[in-house]
Amino acid sequence: METIAYVQTERERHYKIVAFIQIVYASLGLIFGSIAALLLFGLSILPGFQGPGMSEFAILRILSFVAIGVTVLTTLPALIGGIGLLKKQPWARILLLVVAVFDLFSFPIGTVIGVYTLWALWEPIDWRRRGISEESNQALVRHDLSD
Image (cartoon, rainbow, N blue to C red):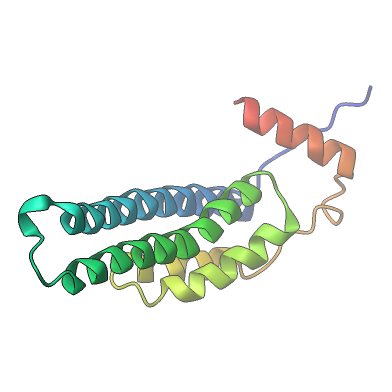
């Protein structure tokens, strides 16, 4: 079996950093969004807060479901894209570029993450141009994941 000398380039290092940042940022967003939704739902079912006008509490319940839906819709693509980028999937770069555009509007931390993601992922890595076959690429992915 032929061994391949593999040196990680600067761009590949930035790809890995972007993947980790997106995974952590999405995970934190999912955790805090879920907590906020649970608090809204919890307030809507507390017995001491329920009076004759139940419409306020129905609104809180609806808001809690909307909050969890928005949280999942905004964090799941970043989480999936980050994992895909770690596995060197070509679709993950495009997905994270789209996520980065939306991150720009989340001032200030999301803006920084969005700018860095756009900068790091703007140019794709062509694994074939580097002389790495698909089988070798998969072996490298397995090796990277075992580290």
